[in-house]
Length: 543
Image 1 (cartoon, rainbow, N blue to C red):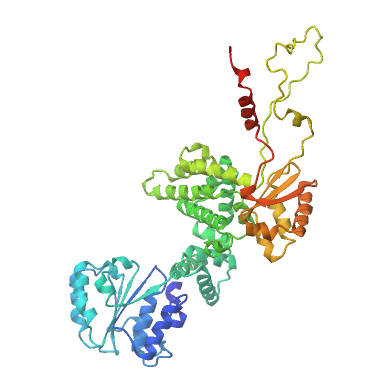
Image 2 (tube, rainbow, N blue to C red):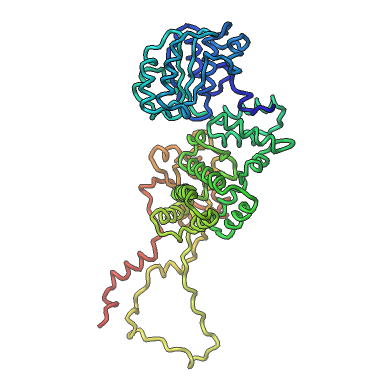
């Protein structure tokens, strides 16, 4: 009969347990020294090895030939515990035996000496499901058990355990497994089972396991049964009904482009292919969350990523969003997914979600407004110059005769005579050409390639420097005096000047300064107009 992979490859010794070295080493040391406790409490999320360690501990205390704290798995005691025929080692499900009568029966049987092995062991799984009266009935025997008795309690919800039980047990916390630990174990299982699997597929399964080894083994079992040949990331996505990293990135790219039609088209295709809507939003939320982490902490946040968000495509996608936009995307996806249980049509919910994500103007809430402002701020920080629309100059009617031309007012009758509008003199002078939109990321990358490791990090597009083009002068502003002192060197200024000429297609001067001392040489036309009106209020007075 076929046996599921998570059961077939359940750890048989403490050495086989993955990712819980602190727990296993302590238990092995207690077994070697003989300083065992009478009651243990194993806590942690699902699939982290609590029940497996409890069974290994039950075998180790009864093993006839232990090896450095590990059971031999060959003696009669180990074999009987493994196949469940040992009556002195009992595994009890507290979810279905949570009444006080069940605990009283356990307490009455526990006083008898074991008949087959050295110690009687009770493994109570999901112990938080016991009622208050059942916990009270268990107190006395846990506090002062007979010498032949050992209790091992396991739970996923530590906060539901009474303090009186906690104080009578040695508590061991099982941590959530990392993606590397899960991928390594799944690779071992795949090798033993003759499953040809690619590294990308292993990483995807490890991410979907969400820190639980049992979930990862079950997913591998499902995908290996559904696919023939080499198990790729695309095959895993198809077997599990997922959209996949590429489709998810395309959806988020459509959101970045504010292309609602393309986003709806992509979603419609995925929906027609039978993709699970909740799983699709979960993938999209995970990708947006990783982008937000990369945006907030480009270096220290790499260890917190839940998916392969370090590729060039995803890194480029990160530059297209502001932090406020990503925060809004994650929040809206979570709110939509939370409402699926009460929704009559999840497809409509998702379509409305993509419409709002692509067009923040459809929402009037503060978060949507913050996202729109964040996009403008990011564009300004990246050096994007927004050209102001000017009214086209009226064409001179060359085909009209002098008699047909409209008469111009005399200077004496014109109240604006003699007044020169601000900026008119400068308008006649040739204007310098503007730089290409978003030139700073490309320029920073070219500069980084020529710098040493000390200065290279400051010229990241998301680093402590901002660049703006003011006429024929490239102004680079630093956040602190320390950063300015590092980059304000003649050789670095010459390098910036040389690379900027290549990016902007014309020579420019370079000015290095602090953000706090940054002054704008180009005055705003609206400010000039207000200043002009303040100086000449008399000409606007209607008499």
